[in-house]
Length: 83
Image (cartoon, rainbow, N blue to C red):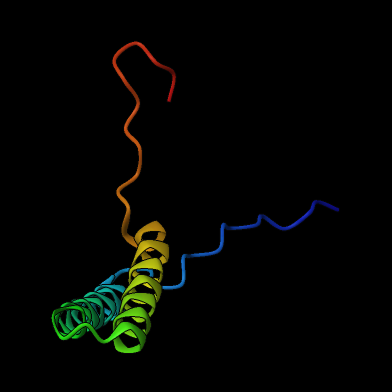
């Protein structure tokens, strides 16, 4: 008796990356908003507000960076390199 052929599992967003790009857009817009707010707080010499806004902007950027793994194009082999 032979073992049934296994097929590789499709990625979570197989066929479309729309949901990933939507989440990436939201994370970057939030980071932009927090960064602008942080700049406003810094201009007002509001330490607490600036620190909070900068930390939030950093968290949003970290979230966006983690989403890059989902949309990063596949590495293409260089000329002469085995596939």
